[in-house]
Each structure stands twice: as structure tokens, then as C-alpha cells.
Length: 120
Length: 179
Figure 1 (cartoon, each protein chain N blue to C red):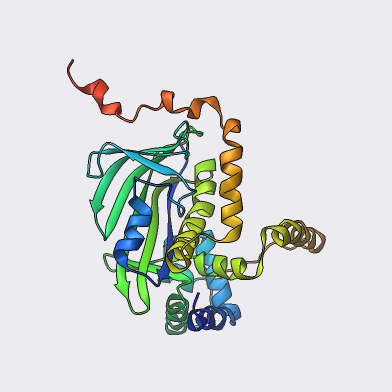
Figure 2: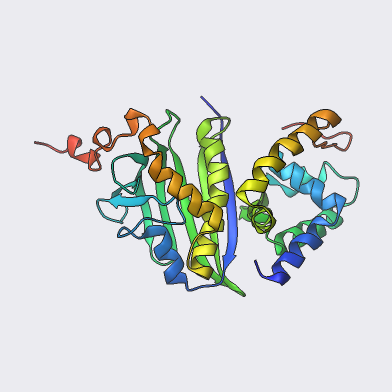
């Protein structure tokens, strides 16, 4: 991964709103822009801007189907970052430690919806 | 029946489109990007049959039909893990030139959600593209992957009997043809 590509990924991830957009897409792969907007109180234009930043960092893949823009989370850049600093050995120990932390903190990744939205 | 879904994986690789396409479709060597499997095929053209077998050729891991073959742009095939009884899904590789290199998109359609196949495809899609990038840009897969491939060869005997190549004839269509 070239350093400017990596800058784009870290830049894109340095925003809670954009991280939450990725949570939404992971949970609902292929959903449209309106669906993503339901999770946020910021306007549609702001959401679209976030989507563009994520797409420029290759963390998001979008496809135009008819008049809709459907969105997928692309995990590959994060995988490449993981590969850069993790060896088979450290992954072996890091995995259980991370799971222990989740279990002790009893905290799944939260996705909050804006009121009024409904599950598809 | 499980609900079906679609996953998309994308990467940009600094290399020639032909070289990248060949790493995904070559039949004369193990494919380092795709779990070091060897592609066996009756012919890479729509309607052809294809299988991903172990290096020894003794076991079939994936069985499928070629749907599209348009080098060096698109390759699509149906995909069934021989180890699992899940419905067939579809795998498409799409290559195009962008600034900075060649963009490779791997799409999995009709993925049976919640099945073992879906789980394997989600992890597999990422590794295939990451390994492909490493092979094209540095000449070989990353160290961890190379170790894994060494283990695959040593541990081939643990593969279930049902994946033995004798149970998965490449030319399945023959049965349908008149004698």
C-alpha cells in the first residue's frame, strides 16, 4: 500500500461519523444512501460528503443500479494495514486479548439509529 | 433457504493488467493469490467447466462453471465449495486501469447468508486481493501466506473424503449428452 493510499485510509477513519457509516454498511451490505442517512442527524449532503471521502480511500465501493447508489464496505485496505504490522505470531496472541477486552467491557460495536427509521 | 447477499472487495495494484489477469486465471501453475490452488478447466470460455484443486490435484476445493472470460478484463464463474452443501454462488473478477494502477474488484453474488460458504468468502475475498497485490508488486505472497501454503500441502490428508477428485469429475456435462 502506497503511503498516500494509507494516508487516505487513516484520514477517512479519523471521523466517528465515517466509522459509523462503515458499521452500517457492514451490517447492511448493498444498502442505498437514504438508508445510511436514517442513522444520522446530519443532512444528506453531509452524509454524501462522508461517503465520497470513504470511497476515495477505497473503504467503500458504490454501484449505480437504476437511479440508486448502492454501497458496500470494502475491508481490503484495513486488511492491508493489519498485514503491515501483524505477523502470524502476534495475531495469534492479539486475537484472544482483543476478545477478552470485548468480553470484559461487554461492549459490542454500537450502531444507533436516528429516531423514525425502521429496520428493513 | 438462506437469504442471499453480495460482497464486494476492491484493491488497486501497481502492475500490468495482463500480469494480474494471469495470476487469477493461469492453469499452468498453482495460483499463489488463490490459496495456491491449481485451476483445472475444460476451457476458459462461457460454458466451460473449472475447478480449483490442491497442488497435488488429488482434492477439489471449488467446483464451478465458467460464465465469462474476457482477458484481461473480466472472469466470472459459479462457485461451490466441495466441502459444504451450500447453494452455488457466483464470483466475478473485474480489472480496469485507474490512476495509480489497476483496480481489481472481486464480487461475490448470490452468497447464501449465514452459511459457512459466506463466512469463507468474506475472509477469502480479502486474502485473495491482498495476496494478489503482493505477488504482482513484490513477486511473491506475504510471508504468513507462504507459511500457510506450506501447511496446506502437509495437511492435505485431513481434507474430507468427499473432496477427493474422483468424486468431482471435471467434465460433468458429459452425463447429459446422448451416448
